[in-house]
Image (cartoon, rainbow, N blue to C red):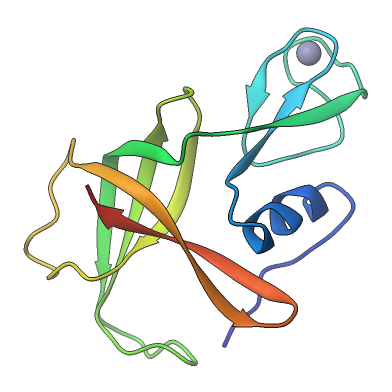
Length: 128
Ligand SMILES: [Zn+2]
């Protein structure tokens, strides 16, 4: 399968999924949450960064159903959603165990965790 890139800015996120926590980066200077993670705060420019553990719940802002082309390690179709977390940040994720004609804008979702191997646990989303 295609593996996500893990670097200094995103290590905390993947450490979180391994612990079954959905973490979002937070600026230690102004408190703003941001996703995707990066070295500097887009609001205040501070480099001092931490994270919060979210509740792992959100709603569908938008979605696509991917039917073609093939994705290594995946059975198609897959449902990919933009999810507005209750904490106010938006992230992309795969919605599982839901027929591709069942997803709707505004649908409440809850995160779950899928252990791929010893080094990688992926967040996936399920209908609440
Ligand atoms: Zn800031």
